[in-house]
Image (cartoon, rainbow, N blue to C red; front, side):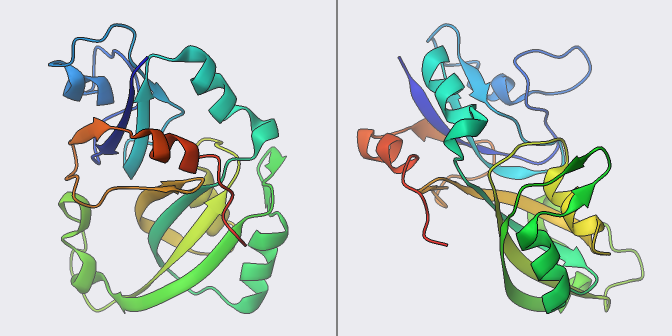
Length: 198
């Protein structure tokens, strides 16, 4: 069985095959192991840590909601996160058709759209270069479609950049450029199951 850490670039979809779009597996065409597939998914406009394996049982265990493996994301967003809005997210915020499970969120920095326009192949800013943006990290144990974006939108914030930086205790190797991958070490495979202290 093989296990890879992949730095998924923005603009490709998390699928094995697709007639219309470039997929994450298109980056693995030179790899000979049969049956490789992504573990979970990242949205087309999201970059960052994605695991690739041909171990179906390991994939199922990692993605099973009962195991509550935290996925941590770095985001930049428009808007403002007050302490009350943070509490709403941390307590489990209602979304259309569901209530998101409680998340861990931490604010990091403030800049302008012009400062971050080169992230992930470019953010379209038009004439809004001076518009304030803020960054933070958020840890979730679910994987609903566009979940982080939807959670922040529910409190009036609009995500302009999203990157998964960790799964459990495993963090993305920042020496990997978008589109690059390498095999996981045995120690890294174990780190996935280490719960972060929150």
